[in-house]
Image 1 (cartoon, rainbow, N blue to C red):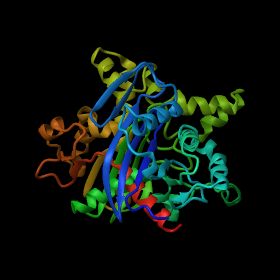
Image 2 (cartoon, rainbow, N blue to C red):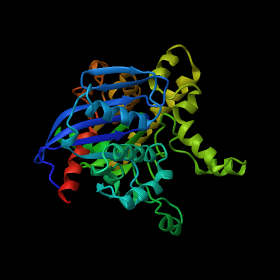
Image 3 (cartoon, rainbow, N blue to C red):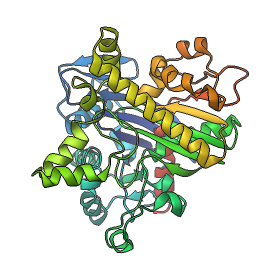
Length: 397
């Protein structure tokens, strides 16, 4: 299928946001046309931004509502006014591809049904991404839809990092392995570090509502914090992160049903569970300053878990040359970055406090000149990676 001169719409569905970006395809080159986001979906107050437009909303109920608003703004009169006839395809970030989807694919009915079957493995993300695809299908029924998978970047993890120490027949029968997530974001961080020649041994940190760490050797992942589902690893907004499986067995014996457990681990744990009041780092920092003990506990545990993974990955890699922060928290919270990094002086991390304080949502080196480990803040830019993958899929027919 030819896309030269056409428009590619990328829709990146998160757990509480929908980012969108339109590119013009000019051969293999991509030119950004316009982009924006709907943020704080499902909260009392939401926001919409696109180009120069900024708007506070009374509340966007769900990602379907967000997608309809985005499409209306992009392609209807009174908004961006883009020509719908020039739209060649839409591309979608899908969190979990399972063991079947290890590369970007064009969505067919059978592929859509297969992705629906993976929804229990990423309940905060896969159903939302599929719902956005359905909204696009309602508006543009004949438009090609391409899915790009967060798990693909980690598909070739070494066996020692990929396999759980469980009976082999369980793993084989149910495709149980460590898949890894946020792969598109970690791929972008890896590419930026590579361009900066930051060194072969790196840890990338994607810190947002969901959080993950990856150990990279020469730009390729050798380990990552998330596993079979996006629940494993770091403390997150409402997800537990690492947890003794015996806790689940114990609660099940006490009569807790699987739906209750799933809801608790995905929606009521993490920063929210520890603090008892909020899953938002900005709110927790403000409450901590007012003396809230739960907020302090949540933030201290959050930062400690990140340091724990950085130290572990330094051991896996045989040393450390670079750290990169991405994601909403990683890019915007100087306070969290300092609390993570300052105790890592033993590892060779020397923070430039002034550079760190000045860095909000922009790319910058925040380590001091003499630091043995270079530290960067890198705004994650997943949309061009998704758009390039769309070109490959469409070119293949």
